[in-house]
Amino acid sequence: MPRLAAFPKAFMQALCKDGSMTLREWVDLAAPLGLDGLEYYSGMLELADPQRWPEARRTVESRGMVIPMLCCSPDFSQPDPALRKLEIEKEKNWIRMAATLGAGYCRVLSGQRRPQLTKDQGLQIVQENIEACLPEAEKCGVTLIIENHYKDDFWEYPEFAQKMDVFCELVDRIHHPRFGVNYDPSNAFLAGDDPLELLRRVKHRVVTMHASDRYLLSGTLEDLRKEEGGALGYAKRLSHGEIGKGLNDYDAIFSELRGVGFDSWVSIEDGVDGMEQLAGSVRFVRGKLKQHWPA
Image (tube, rainbow, N blue to C red; front, side, top):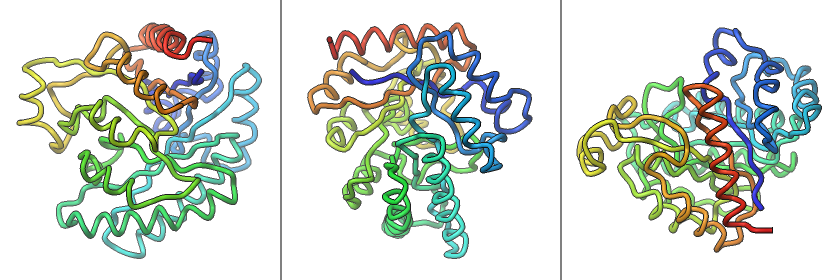
């Protein structure tokens, strides 16, 4: 059965910007949820010093969990070659961070969808940058996972490969044992795409998953596709919320994944309204995992 982790979505500002929460405090909050692991983010303030990486790992493992995934946001679509080189070096450092934390998976992204970048230019640049990181991943025993992403919390523009067709073309360009897909069904809605159609196209490449849910605040999905699919800034029609009460069909999603032998990590990326909401998401996803992967 897949193992279950959680990402501190509600505490990104506290952990990454103002330092009002420590990693130990996050671990203590999450430990009672009965998770198998905690997904970490490369921009957490306490991880800026490599000497603290072993301590961060011990803190999680002392509570009976592990750090399976490191969430990173390399901006690989930089038009300037010198800036792209810097992004590659940052990702290589994050790969080493992931390995030291005990994580088997480290996220990569395509970068921001800058207005001056054509599709062909972007695909070539991003492919080259990801492939430049693969030797380091292989050396460290870490698998790079590209997510059908919307937008990093701290970016100006949405993801270059946000749209399904561009994302699938990028994935099809890279074949390596240390490269796979981190599937996020909710992000497909933000791109104006069908999450299940995307999953069917990439399911044989999926090695990890983000679990979340979205709610329509107004209008219909068709309105979203027409007006806000891929728009700059977060879609105003959609909101985060407790998993199992939104738009995603988790029975269909898990059926597809079970059908291709998926047995890896599912990381909950919700709980933006607090720990009670996160606990509800954990109960729901854990129950669905047991239902679709019976012992």
